Image 1 (cartoon, rainbow, N blue to C red):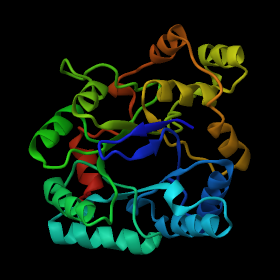
Image 2: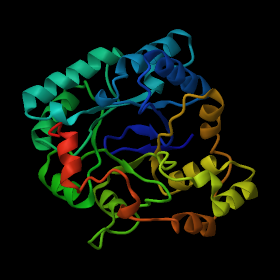
Image 3: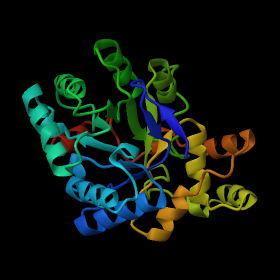
Image 4: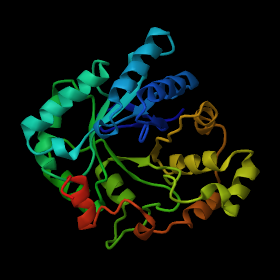
Length: 293
């Protein structure tokens, strides 16, 4: 496992395990437990996933079974937009996440979207960070212009920005400006973290002949190659699976390295913002997330 150092000084694993769209609590708990058993130490959940209790149960179970200690784990959750209307509401939601997880503290807590009063919510998160409830705080789905404004206005710079990052949406070039999402994160010392690192089921990378050729050259699977590509770009990845074989497969990316040519060939599949399903700039998407339609 490789680690990246956050602006807090903490070490964050470069690969973790996600639980988006795993609403069955028993399945979620068992999948997280299996991931920890395999060797994952970063676990990513969110209030909106409605499975924080299951993640906490898996963590406590793994600790009780002697697989790891709490200090060896890096657990992330996220504040949903309907809990970001003001500081008091956000503070209550943070405490509710901590109660549901029941693991003492969170290693990282993110604002899930740049919506509602995310500055007021950030003040509540900053208070919780300074109180030791949250060891680091960050954001998710903050596009370059929003992240720039945010970092120039807050006292505590986000440690992480979790965004869509995969070969079909590399975010290596700017949308309408000279700085890409990755450029802006580097400027402010914010670590990029990829949700949907394998495309989120919206594409078919496993049948791509170019990806398959690179995989064969390394004796790896396409999934392993694409995860490795992001890691070599300095991007933390959090693949999700509920299947033990795939959980283990996704973790086995630390014994090979892609060449510069292979990295460029993978990045050449970029489709830009037009290829992304999560249309954060569209008014209908904003209203949907806010529960207004």
